[in-house]
Structures are given as structure tokens and as C-alpha cells.
Image 1 (cartoon, rainbow, N blue to C red):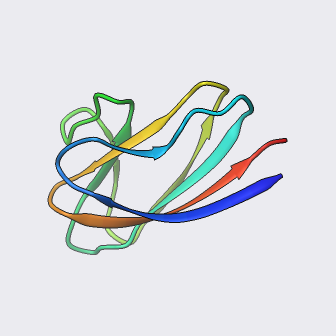
Image 2 (image 1 turned 180 degrees about the horizontal axis):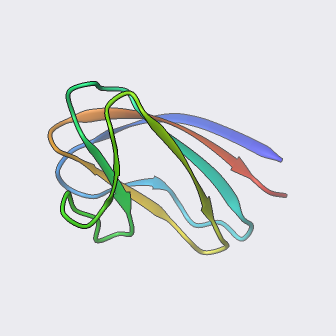
Image 3 (image 1 turned 135 degrees about the vertical axis):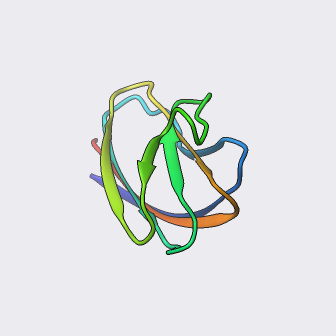
Length: 87
């Protein structure tokens, strides 16, 4: 298993958090801010249609081969990400 850690700054435009891979991935996204809201989903994610992650909360997503995860914020926010790639 390969583990990748990163921090991504999200704005109101969709940003790639975890790109597609040929194997499954487990992606944990932690909202570092207590003041901003984070939303994740596909490449068309918005604050209206995304999966909401509250301030200082985290969630783990399973991405299947070819899937990607994008995120936006209600302002400007940094998220911490850990990706476990199955090999």
C-alpha cells in the first residue's frame, strides 16, 4: 500500500483533491478550518451539491479505479488529505 499526504487550498472553484488511479483508493479529507465549510464530490462539485464536511471534521471516501475527488470551500480553506492507494 502506498500512502500519500498533502494539503490542498480550496476556493469556490472545484479543485482536484485525489486524482484517478488504476486501483482503489481510500481518501480522508480533514477540514482544517473552524470558520469555513468544505464540500466534496465530482468535477462539478459546488457548495450546493457537494458532500458537506464541517469545520475541524473529517471523512473518508472510497474511490474506485478511475474515480477522482474534487472539493470547494465557502471561502478559502486548506484541507489535509491522506490517500491510501491499494497496490
